Length: 232
Image (cartoon, rainbow, N blue to C red; front, side, top):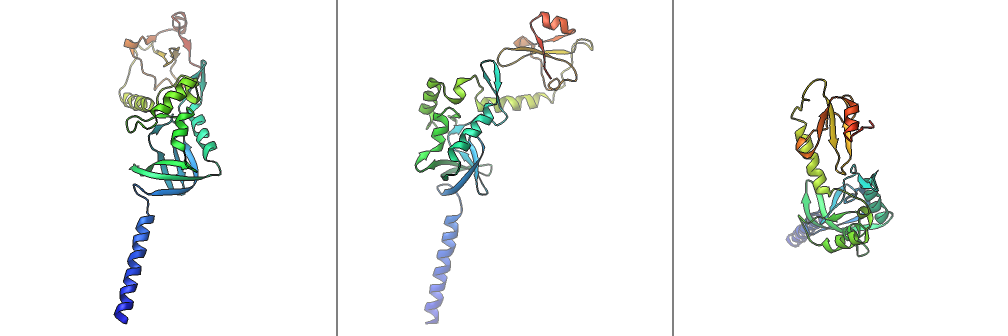
């Protein structure tokens, strides 16, 4: 009788261990709960950071050009995801892990949140990893929804550019002379802006002469050449 009781105890303990392992989150498992977005393609459920699989949203600090005006589109993308999940129970099917984040396809009552972010124009298909949402991106672009109402840099390209700029900062760029130190920069939208020493973006601005950028010695010369002064 004692041997039989011991066997039952061991079996129950084994089942308990198995259940605990099943409850731990890994590829193929599910995370369920209220979600708190951190940007347009990421959120947290409890203490677990979730990265939405197959989509790429503009970064929180990223801006877009809307009819010649700077638009905080990164913040708008995050707010769109906030509206989608607010007060609702989100179910995330884990596909992979990435730097501690649970890369998942998430839904609310069967509605694919990943797809909705792309379909409404607040993210693009992350084709480096999946083609699942390419058709949704095409449709959102054709209808001019979300980000597609403006001009924007694809998130992957934006991050790559920031890395290049960070690397460029390691290289000292000196003006042709001490008196000709105004930096004539050309923005992504083609706007010509010159930066003076001491201004906010002066140090991080790099002059690429092959792209038409140039140094100026005098603000008047810069303005006559079609550049305007930086606002800060």
